[in-house]
Image (cartoon, rainbow, N blue to C red; front, side, top):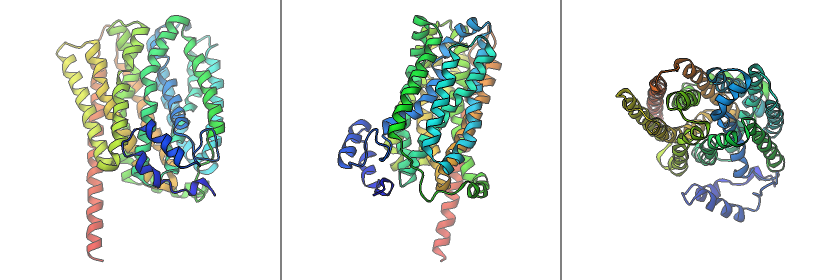
Length: 442
C-alpha cells in the first residue's frame, strides 16, 4: 500500500492539538508504523525537514560576525563584503523561480540531493579563496541550499490534506529551523575567535554532507501522482500570476520579512561601527530576532487552525511594526543602545514567526496542483525583496552615523506589509460575501 494514500488527517489533529512537537511526534510514529526515520518508503521525518529548511538560514548568517576579519584577510572592506548577503539572497530568489516548477515535474528528492552536493562543493571551495571576487562568486553557488527550504515546504503540502494543517506543520518546521539563526552567529563568532573565519565554512561543509546522507535515506518522493507535467504547468502558470490573492499573500510575507533581511544586511555594520562590538559579542547579540521567531512559529503551530491564517498574518505584522516603532522612537530621541536595537528585534522575529508560515501555506493553497511552483515563486519574491533591502541597508549606513537609517528602512518595509495584509483580508471577505450571495440565490 502506497504511504501517500494513508489518511494523514487521522493523526494531524493530535499533532496540532498543542501537546508539543517532540512529545507528540513519537506518539504518532508508534501508532502509525508506516512513518519511519531513515526509511524513504515512508514520509520524511520532521527532523529531516527541519535540517533541510535550516541549512540555508545557517549559510546566510553564520559568517556575518566574521565579516571584518574576512575583509581584512581578502584586502577588502566590511561594506563590500556585506554585499555577500544581498548576492546570496538575490541568487536564492532567482533559483527558486525554477526550483518549484522543476520539482513539480521531476520530483522533490533528486533536486534536494543534487542541491546538497553542489552546496557542499562550493562551501569547501570558499575556504581556499584568495580575493573578494572569488568569495562573492562562491556565495552564488552556496545559494542553492535555499532550494532545500522550498522543497521542504512543498513536501509538507504534499503530505497534509488541508491548508490549515499545512500552515501549522510549516510553522513547526520553521520553529525548529529558528534555532539556527539564533545560535548560528554566536557559533560563527566563537569559531572566528578560536580558529579564524574559515572555520565557519568547514562546519557548513560538514553539516551539508551530513544532511545529504540523512536525506538520501529518509526522503522518498512525495510528489503527488496527479501532478501536472511541465508543459501543463507552463499553460496554467499565468493563472497563478494573475491571482490577486497569491500576490497579496506573497507581498505580505515579503514586506514583513523585509525588516529581518534589512537587519541581516545592516546589523554587522551597526554592531561593529556604531556600538563597537567584537565578532564574538556581535554573534551573541545578532541572534535576538530568533528568540521571538521561535515563539512566533510555536504560536502559529498552536493557533493557526483555530484563529485562521489571515488573522495570524495580521497579528504578526502588527507585532513586528510595534517593535520597529518603539526602536525608532528610542533611537530618534538619542537613547539608542545595544539593548534597544538588538533586543527589540525579537518583536520583529515574533511577527515574522506568526505571519510567514501562514502566508506561505495560504499562497500554496491558491492552486494546490502548483504547490511547488507557488512555494518557489513566493520564496523568490520574499527573498528577492530581501536582497534589495539588504543592499539598500549597506548603502545607507555610513561610517560615523547611527543605526537610525536602518530602523527607518525596516519600519517602511513592515508598514507596507500591514497595507498588503489589510488588502488580502478585504479581498477574502469580499469573495466570501459573494459566495454567500450566490448560495442564497441558487
